[in-house]
Image 1 (cartoon, protein in one colour):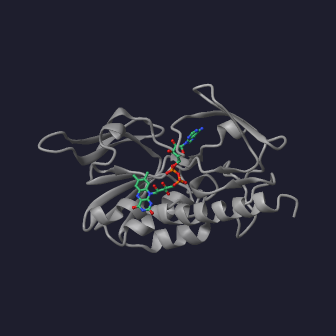
Image 2 (image 1 turned 90 degrees about the vertical axis):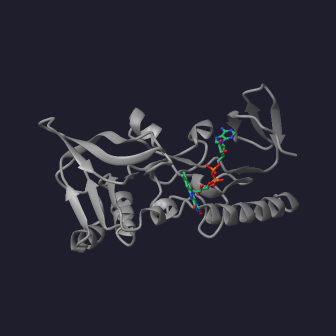
Length: 238
Ligand SMILES: Cc1cc2nc3c(=O)[nH]c(=O)nc-3n(C[C@H](O)[C@H](O)[C@H](O)COP(=O)(O)OP(=O)(O)OC[C@H]3O[C@@H](n4cnc5c(N)ncnc54)[C@H](O)[C@@H]3O)c2cc1C
């Protein structure tokens, strides 16, 4: 059965695990699969929200194809931003990476590839101030207003799209510190498995996957979790 509800608390201290939802329902279970996903972090600008899905994205692998021979801006300074910029340069005519600092946090090898890519330009010490665009005849991005991080000076950069690459947050709030986590808060799982640090609790999809975060990998991990949970229920003490 499928129940539409929000899990508010989960007690994983002993089996059966206890889950309480926002509608007040209580569930007891011998095995639990967590597949609560991860949320992209956004800049928090109203204009970013308005153009999300219409030129503003947080996933180059998903939406890069829509920017063939176009100019895109990537905002961020870590590995994600560098990877997104490199991926987008395969499609776009130009990629501008906007970073608020004077150096990137991305791994050196990624930085090297980035600086060697003639399609990628880095704009240092700037933040995205506003996404500029049209509402009519259809929502579309026309440019990005940048603000200098120190002086506050603004400039408009013509662009067809914005990729926000400032990280993701896995949805793990309700589990607190009951499960071992990886850096970044993703649920730790045994390599090649969906088993978490608590026997009987399995994690699948973006909530435990800080590398791929794709629908197809999430579906595969979900299948693994279902099989592992079934085996666990058949032999809980093995
Ligand atoms: C704009 C966009 C485009 C994308 N395009 C592609 C693509 O083309 N190809 C591709 O492979 N991937 C794509 N992805 C990535 C793909 O959507 C994710 O990798 C995939 O959805 C992850 O699946 P999941 O089940 O782990 O998490 P999710 O799909 O995020 O599902 C998690 C679910 O858990 C629910 N939830 C969270 N907390 C609770 C709680 N406490 N109680 C109850 N429910 C809860 C959420 O509401 C949500 O419904 C895209 C992502 C985005 C944002």
